[in-house]
Length: 122
Image (cartoon, rainbow, N blue to C red; front, side, top):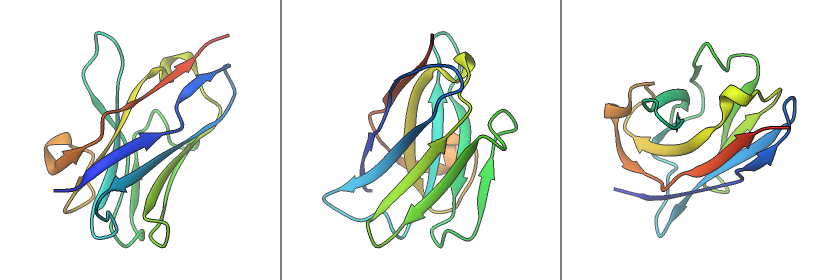
């Protein structure tokens, strides 16, 4: 397993942007597929985006397609989620997770970060 640390969350106005980062603590995430998930109060955790270990394959939930971009810099051992045109319904705790293959299903991941809060509000 690998320990993951998310950062970059915060409060942003509707229409604004944020970039989340997912880094490994004490190990490397370059051999793993990474998924981003989010959970809003009272709702189930949902897949937002994921990327293969090579970075060649990426997937997005319909709700974020065209607004969010996932990328990875294996030299920096970091995966990013660039979020633009944010909406109040994007408010949630965002988690990154590591697994063997890119999937939008949470059960496919064995290591999870603690999460970072994203709040979209005016």
